[in-house]
Image 1: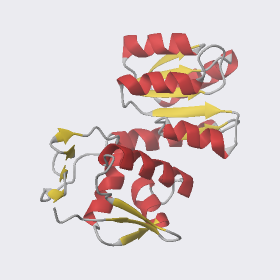
Image 2: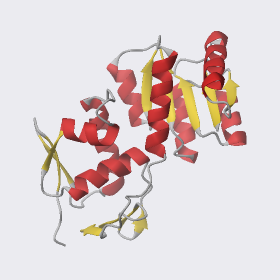
Image 3: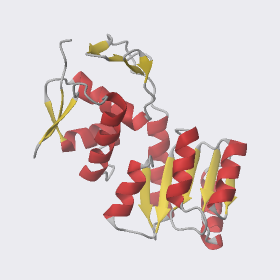
Image 4: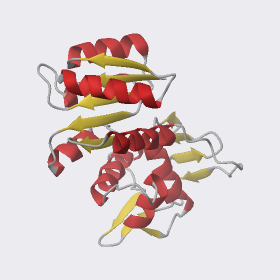
Length: 230
């Protein structure tokens, strides 16, 4: 497994490298001191996960994340000393899979990495499910293929899992906490802000201007998937 660490703090890079190598014997740790080097190593080695600092000279973490998302859906975990919600939400909106605020314990970080990797490697459902169609949207559960007007929609593992639970409960209101538990897991401390960001991302990928909406916000309760007749 290739793990790319991008952080301008040499002590942080060293600590992460040692911790990750101790935990995963087969891991190859790629360490970059800035965004430019991080993007070069990313292009050369195609890592399985990226640990990305936000505040760096030159290209900051948000800019690097944008570049990565133009090329790949690889899991990205943001590392930053910023604890404000605005920065966290911005990272999630740009496509980060998780967000860890410094200082953090390495055991907690390893747990987050494992959770992100598990979500990225979600297998198809064990038993075949019938295809789900509504309006211009089609979901093929067996191979996790989603199309709108016949064109394939690229979803991240989290986005697909969220759509899966909404669609399988079409017409029912799913409370925010229910979705958080089903998509991120009961032991994961994802918040309603995470859910709002991913709902927004999912809507942007599924809904075209002027078309019918599929995901309805039920204020104060949660979200409901609307199944269209046409």
